[in-house]
Every structure is written in C-alpha cells, then in structure tokens.
Amino acid sequence: MIERKSGMEVGWNLDNSYTHLPQLFFTNTNPTPVPSPKSIVLNCPLAKSLGLNTEALENNGASIFAGNEIPKGASPLAQAYAGHQFGHFTMLGDGRAILLGEQITPDGKRFDIQLKGSGRTPYSRRGDGRAALGPMLREYIISEAMYGLGIPTTRSLAVVTTGDTIIRETELPGAILTRVASSHIRVGTFEYISQWGSIDELKALADYTIKRHFSDIDTDGNPYISLLKEVIKRQAILIAKWQLVGFVHGVMNTDNIAISGETIDYGPCAFMDTYDPKTVFSSIDRQGRYAYGNQPSIAAWNLARFAETLLPLLHDDEKKAIKLAQDTILEFHDIYHCNWINGMRRKLGLFNEEPEDEKFIKELLSMMDKYKVDYTNTFRALTFDNTKDTPLHDKEEFSKWYKQWKSRLEKQKETKDSSHELMRNSNPSIIPRNHRVEEALESAGKGDYSVMNKFVKVLLRPYAHSSKQNEYTKLPPPSDIPYRTFCGT
Image 1 (cartoon, rainbow, N blue to C red):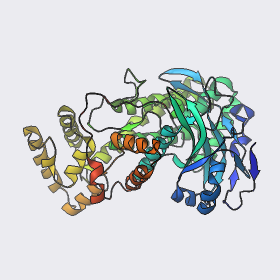
Image 2: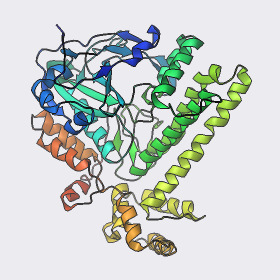
Image 3: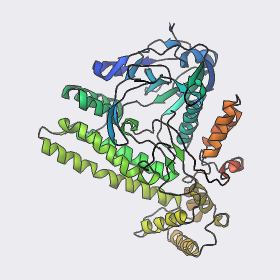
Image 4: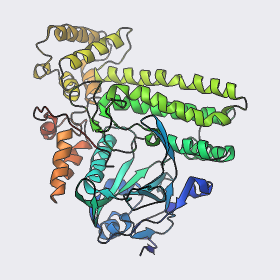
C-alpha cells in the first residue's frame, strides 16, 4: 500500500503543471510498491541544489525513491509520447517511469522528479515496468560524468534496490532510479499529439513548452517559429558538445530527444576510446545508424520530424508552413558546425580564426583514425605537449602537422600560457571509459560500491588534470571482442 506523507522535513516543494494539459497527454498512475527498498545512491549535492534535506533523505529516502511513499504535492503520472525508433514511427509512452511532479527549487527553478523502473503503466505494453540495478547505476555514472564535462544532461538523484528479482536473460536485482530533468517533453511528445491529438491540443503543448523552457523568446511575431529555432539551436550546441568529447548516445530515436536540449535516456551509450567516426556500441544498431560520425545528421533528421509536427502552427497555408520549416531546419548545420569548429579550436589552444583551420583540424582527426589512436589521450598529450607518449609521435605526417600547429599558435597575440590554460579547460583528462564503467558495475553487483563512488568523484572534475586521475587515463587491454552495450535503461 502506498503511503502519502507530508514530506515537510524532506523539503519537497512539488507542483505538477503537466496535469494542466489535456488528459490525452498522460495517465494518472501510482508507482507499484516494492517489498524492501534499500538506498544505494543519494546524490547529496544535487539534492541540496533542489532544496531537499539530505539528512532526512538518508534516513527515509529509500521509501520515497522506491515509490512506496508519495510526497505531499505529488501527482504521479505516466506521460504519453510516440517516436521514430530507428526511423520507424510507433506509439510509446512511459512504460516503466512515473513522474511524481516538479520540484520548485529555492531559486524558483522547476525540475521534473521521475521514478524510473517503478512498475507497469498503461504504456508498458508487454513490459514488466521494472529495471535492473546495473543499468540504473550505469545511468548514474554516465549522467554525472556528462554533468562534470559541462554537457546539458538529466541527472540521477538516487538509486534504490527494490528487494525484487527481475528476469531478463538471467535473474537480476531490481532497482529504481530517480531522474531529475528540466522536463521530459520530447520530440516524440509532439509527434504523439500531432498524430492523435487536435490542433488545439498541439497548440496547448507548444504554448506550455514555450512557457516552461523558452519564456524569453520573441512572441511578437510567430512564437512557434521562434520555438523551432530555439530547439534547433539547443540541439546543435548539445550535439557539438557530444562530438567534442567522443560521446556516443547509441539510440537517438525521436523519443530520446529532449526539447529542453538536455541529454536524456542513457541506454546503450558509451564514450569512444579509439577515434573512429564509425564507432557503434549498441548491440541493436547493426547498420550503424547512430554511429558517432552520424550523430549530427541524425539530429537534423530528428529536428525535421519535430518541425513537421509544428506545421499547422507555423502558417495557415501548408506550402508556406513547409517552406518556413525547411528554411529553419537548414540553420542546424551552420549552428552545429560553428560550435563544433570553435570547440575544436579551443581543444588546440586557438583563440582566433584562420581560413585553413578546418582543413588543419580534419588532418589531425584523419591521422587519429588512420593510426587508431585514443581520442581523449591524444588531445591530453597535445595539451601538455607530451606527444612522445602517443602512437602518432614517430609518424612523418604528424611531425609536419605538429610544426604547423606550433606555427599557428605563434600567430596569436595570446601567450603560450593562455593557450595551455584554454586547452586544459577544453580537453578532459578522464572520461567514463568503458572498462572502468564495467569494473564499477561488477563490484557494485557484488555489493561493493566503493569503486563506483571513487570513480564518480573523479569524473565530476574531468578538467582538474591531477595526478590522482592518472590511473583512469589508462586504456583497456587489447581485445578482439568489440565493446557492446545494451538498451537496459
């Protein structure tokens, strides 16, 4: 039986503005209680920023984060949405996630509080609505790493075990993750309403999204063109940040694209070790649709699907609406390219712009691909001018490139120290390398969370370049078996 308590000592300040939308958008659903919840992770810095009392959560948080106790002010619901999954449109929805409500922080910001793995919902189809411990901890590790890298992301407030065993390929311990997001409005949310709702309901969603995320946009003209432009801008900036650190999302379906511009749904994601634009980790992406090098073009494709949903709001004349959408979508590549190339300049210590920069940058990436060198460690070696530790060091073409780079740096008015500082702040010393993630999860599976906790602590300061981080920069042992990830989250 679910208890509903005041939650005053915890600091909940919950609202649920999403319930003001038409009923088509969601279904009121309570979490399914679990037998014996136990707290595994409590993200205290995040909890404090939300205005929550960490001491109270440490004492009684497991019951709340398991869904056994509903905080005062919560209006639990499962959201409806659709999505293009690997290019194919389908009806979806929160099949194992329940939105408790929106926590209003002491500084007036609003964040969704969602329980992931909290039981069946009307959108579960044949699923059990549950989640396993390993994937929930994986989302916690990767999302905190992304936060440390300065990349917009949902975050993990808590992970609890449920006391249940769930069946996947084997029996696994059940767990629930509490996810914090600016919102869970997705491209797929708009696709759902566009397909099964009315124009009035579509307008209600667009107006709600503008009020929640883009309240400062120009509403004097056409606010829906402004909405489309802002979503395109945020996605272009986000994807550029992914590319700059070698992050591979793995499943860029439209239901996994957040309108807010945050990274969401950490399923088969991973970070690239060896530089290769064809890098794919997901076990189900057999054609490489969501490979590292394809992420910018896939983002543009997803945004085109978003633009299609807005057509009735862009103009009464369908042809003019299509023309407006097409012209606006074309802005994505320019915004993305500008953010990417400026990011690459920073990674190389370049403050100013030169016409040959793109060719120069791509020559380096081409060598990295050709000689199968580590992406992160190559830029780290350049940062500290220690290239003798890279496989490129004795290559004639790299020596030529290196001299050109040094010459390029000398053309700047900024000092060498300034360039070095720029590179330090642009090239992480550590990323959540796949073998380290697996090591942490394996230890956690045996009840030892110290490896994970230590790992997350260093991941939150990736630009510190401290000696304590050196052990996390080491590459995995050579293997003939490619690293594979699975859609467990």
